[in-house]
Every structure is written in C-alpha cells, then in structure tokens.
Image 1 (cartoon, rainbow, N blue to C red):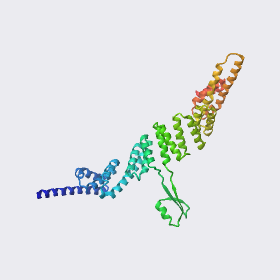
Image 2 (cartoon, rainbow, N blue to C red):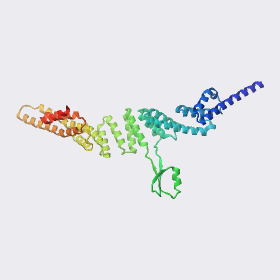
Image 3 (cartoon, helix red, strand yellow):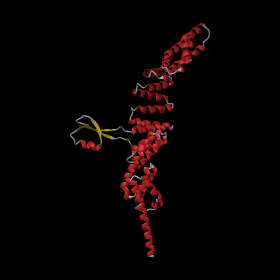
Image 4 (cartoon, rainbow, N blue to C red):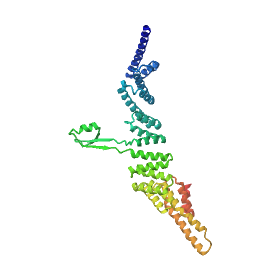
Length: 407
C-alpha cells in the first residue's frame, strides 16, 4: 500500500510540475510580446491546464483572459476574468487587467462609432459599464446615445431609465489657474490645482462644474417613449424634465411635438408660441405655428406667421406656397356665392362685386408667387399657379411669360 501511495504522489507531482512548466513558458512568451506563441501553448496544453490545481488555475485563466483581450474578444475576456474574481492571490493584477480591459473596450467602441457601427459600439460601451458599475456610469450614458444612433430605441430607453434611477448627472469639476507671468488661464488636474495653490507663480484659482446631463436624459426618455408610440409616458417624462429646466427650447419643442401627434392643436399652438418667445428669429418655428394656427381657423394670425417666416428666411419655399394657399382658401366661398345668384339687376351687381373680390385675392398672390419664382429653383408649381391666375385675370402678357418659363 505504501508503494502505491508513493506512486500516486509522484504522478500528481509530475502532473502539477508539467502544468506550471507550460504556464511559465506561455507567460514568458506573452511578456516578450509573442501573444500568438503564448496562445499556441495554452491551446496545445488546454486539457492539462484546465484541470490544474487552485494555485495554478487562476494564473492560467488570467493569462488566457489577457490573450483573449489582446485578440479583441472582449466579451470572452470579460467572462474569463470574472470567473476568477474571488482568487485572492491575483487580486491586484486582476484589478489592473479589468481596468485595461475597460479602456480597450471603450477605445474599440469609439472606433465603431467613427465607422458608423453604432450597434457594436452600444454593446461594447455597456460591457465597459458592467465591468465597474460604480466608476463607469459615463459609459452607460454613452451606450444609451449609441443605441439611439443605432435605432435600438428600447435598449436606449432601458439605459436612460437606469441612469435616471441612479440620479446620474455626469457633472465633472474642472480646475483652472492663471499664470501670473503670461496672464493666461489654463486648465489643470485636481492634484496640480492643489499644488499650484502653494506656488506664487499662479493666481485666479477657480473651479467650474460641467452642465448636468440629467435634463437631457429625461428629455431623451420622453423622446423615445414618443418614438415608440407611448405618448402618455412621453408627456409625463417631458413635463418632469421641464420642471428642472423650464426654458430649454428643445424640451418645449419635444412637448409640442407630442401634443401635435395627439392632435391637441391648441396645446401645440400654446407651446410653439412659447418656443418662439425664446427664439423669435426661427423661421421654422413660425412656419409650423402658422400651419396649426390656420388649421384652428385663425387665418389672420396664420398669415402673419407665414409672412414673418418669409421675412426671416426669404428662401423659405413652403412658407410662400402655404401663404398663397391660405389666401386662395377664401375663393371657394366667393365662388359658391356667385353660383347662387340669379339674373336680376341686384344679383348682377352682387356678382360683379364678388368677381372683383375674387380677382383681388388673385392679385394678392401675384407678388408672393413672383418672389418664390425668383428664388430660381425650378418652381414649377408656383409657375403653373401664377399662369392660371394670369389667365383668369385676362393678363395675356403675364400668361405667356409663365408659359415660356414652364416650357
């Protein structure tokens, strides 16, 4: 029995020795920069190393994780490294390696974003966040942004909601000092800032916080709810966002767009008026307000908004066309009245009066359409409309001019 026990010990010793020997060889190649050679050894002796004891296996898996990371197989590397997170003997090196893994993942995600592969970028940034959910919340924020770019709206919503629950702001304190000799203000690190305070060469010490990302997060939650068709949740989210940032133009417009989707035009009109008060020189805002105001039946105000939009942007084609259409809306009522008249002298006089009113509408449209045509971008619809107006008014010269343009 003693001889059998001795033989077993020798076999186990030789087995353990072989494990350590091959692992040292692989580690040596890896440290020398020969990742391929190190990987080959781990592959050739995988069965041996997979069954290594608790002293050898964590080191083996750490090296395997490094090689996998070097091969840019980040998820696999993460899975390998997290499998040994309880191995006390390698904790310090494992912590460093996880930090390096996080950096590599983020750099790769940045490359993906640059190449337009937003889905891959989203996955990598989320993985970087998972590595350290306390320290890497910024990566969850950027993962949400990449998910929006990839049109992965449900994933983006999940990430933004998590950020909201975490009360994430992304606020960073920046430090600035002024060099006395050059009077130039420079940004420095926190440690430099504290050090320079003890120096007589610097003055004007100040700290500055970056803007909070929290309002943007809540706004994006509202936008995504709206994108997914859940307008009630969208309204709740955007109203919450506006409590913390009531003058944010984008939030006002977001809420307005949700209400127009709900066909609540009065509320849209109210919010668009508020938006214009913040940005009175925005022709697009005025145009959109004009459209809804016209739908609500206030033609006078709608016309004013179209005219203001054109004044701000003389090349705003749709504003010209809508303004003409708005003016010509009055034609139908006039024609109906003309057709209802009889042949009496009084009716004939009324007919002539209505005909003059109709012609006046056409004459109002002529300078508007001419201005649109002068923009010079093949305004076929405007040319046709003006040609028909000239024909109705009996202006042969104008008719021929427009026909020549059309031809």
